[in-house]
Structure formats: C-alpha cells, structure tokens
Length: 394
Image (cartoon, rainbow, N blue to C red):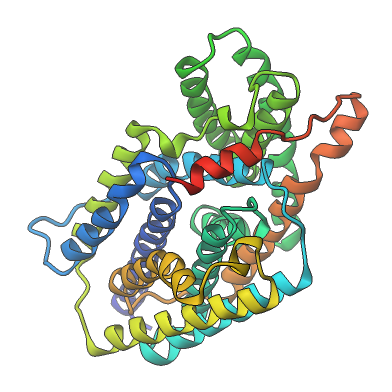
C-alpha cells in the first residue's frame, strides 16, 4: 500500500469528519434558534431562511473554522436552556407519549431516508430532533418533559463527546457521573456567589458566565462537558429557587432570551450557512415534502395517543399550522444544510442516544437525594402556570 494512498484515505476521513462537524453544529444551532422564546422569536424564521439562502451560493472565501471554539461558544447557553426547562417541568411521564414520540421520529427519519436519500443514522438523528422540537411546541401549555430535551442532548453529545464515546462504555458512563458531580459543586458555589450580586442583569450575566465555566471545567478534568454544564444549570435553577435566589420560576435565567447571545448564535449560524454551499436537488425537495407529511402524521399520533388539555378544544388544522411551521423550518434547513457526503456512524449515534438517556436520568432524579441529604425543603413551582401563560401569549 503506497504512502500516497494512505495519505489520501486519511485526508478523506478528515474531510468527512469536518463536514459532519459542520452539519452537526448547524443542526444544533438550528434547533436552538427554533427553541427560542421571547421577543427574539419573531426574527428566527428570517434568520433560518437567510442561512439556508446563503448555503445555496458558493462562498467567496473558504474559512478554516475552529470547531472546538464554535462548540464552546454555542453549547453552554443551549444546555442551560434545556436544564431550565427540565427544572420547571411538571407534566407527567406516560408510555403513550413516548410511543407517539418514537413513532413520529421513525416516520420523519423514514421520510428523509426515502425522499432525500439521507443515510440511516443521519435520518434517525434528524427524526429524533424533529420529534423533540415538536414536543417542545406542543408542551408549551403544560410544561416541558424529557421528550422535548432528548434530541438536543443527543446532538450535543454527538458533537463534543466524540473522543469520549470512542473509548470503552464504562469510561464514557464514568465521564457522565464525573461531570454530574462537578456540576453539583459548581451549581452550589454559583448560587452562594449569586446571592452576593444584585438581582437582575448582574445575576443573569453571572449565570451566563457560569455556564461557560462549567462547560470548560468539565472538559478540562476529563468529564463530560455536556453533563457538567447541564447539571450546573439545573442546580442553580432548582437550588436557587428553593433558597429564594429566584423568587419565582419566571425569574430563572434564560440565556437564549438575551440579545447578546441571540446575536452571537445568529452570526455563527449565518457564517456556517455561507460556508456550507450545498446544491438544491430534486431529492432534497422530495425529502422536505415527505418529511412535512410525516410530521403532520406525528401531530395526529400525538393528539390521539397523548392528548394535551388545549388540544381538546383546538381544531386539527390549527394544531397543524401552529406546530408544523417550526418543524417545516427544521426539515427544510436540515435537508439543505446537511451534506449528503457526510457519513454518520451508527455506533457513535447509539452511544450519544445512550448518553442523552443517562443525562436526562441524572437531571431529573439526582437532585432529590441530594436535597434530602442536606434537608433542603422543596418549594412547589407555583409560578410555572403564570410563566406558561405568558409564553403562550407571545
């Protein structure tokens, strides 16, 4: 085997890895932007459409993008947002909801595989993200659940824990628990320090900085940066709320609502879209159509298997229009921004999904024994209903 051949193969592998990292970062930003609530939400469709439009043109200059830096800029606010959603969640787990979510993810994945010829692992990943986004939208009235957070956590693991998940499974799971332990410590210290700051922007900016510190600390000690950042946010939210740092759940810090974070996320998304350059083909268009149809079927499955209180009075066509817009934007953006040459291995995807399951278990159940150990009394989230109504009325 000639050295030139070996160098060529290694170069191809490196190129595929860069394309995949580009696609995963774009997808994570896309889901994060579509998950934004607040006044910035009205700009999101235009940002997504602009990023997609830029991807159709060949960039004047091809930039060498430092992916670890991009991931470190993008992920902490998104992970904080996921943890805050789970901290204020109060909807009940049902197997029927999980069944509807799984069927929706499989239907969308199948549509992308058949219509746009997306490889199986990539189609499954996009289906899971689309299903999770749909559940975020339909749960806005009754609160968040694991179903709305699963896709973003899986994508975060796939993007930044690649080196970890290629190691033995016990090391991977160990890194999750190390990250969770560090997150508890950083969250506790963060709450005590936040009490020394005036309420309002000072505390919110401190929490944004803490999100980045937690992410970097988890990576530096060899733990999971994803879990460290998420558990830190959960500890700050739940512990801070219970000891009075945040008088109501409406006041919990939400970085994605801050204009600076939104501008940075938008700028990175547009930059990556400009650098993507993907051709518009008939297969991609067919995949979009089939994906939207699959998402519509998923909405009907959700209404049938796990109906929400609002859906008892909301006509089907209104539910379709409300939920389909974000899912359609996700599918359109994904199919136009996902390079068909990029190949996602099944094993990393499977381990990323496992990491998301373990992370959700830690986020949902690890604080109770800690609070019991230190005899911290839990306050009911009495402001959640008020917060939900305001979000719904936006």
